[in-house]
Image (cartoon, rainbow, N blue to C red):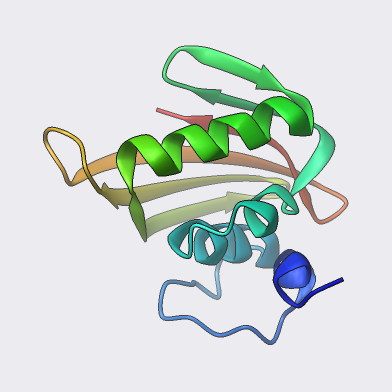
Length: 125
């Protein structure tokens, strides 16, 4: 596998958009998202993960990959993590999201559930 495919498990990858208060997989999700690296983003999720975004719930990596491709193409986004709140395996993170959409930038709340060092659930509000 390539280094890109291991982004979510590689603790050595550095970036200015990370927080030591966040689990490594969340930092890696942010880095991969800002790089628009579809495979690296997807590797952060468990096989049975769910994503809730824009009043839609997606189940499993096939649906999540389609969502990743669609949001990159549609919004050309960039994330800046702001305020994390970590409570065991659930992380709530305010994220400043900028991109090609009306009202950019906006601050959204990302709620991650982590199991076995993978994102098992992500809700964006």
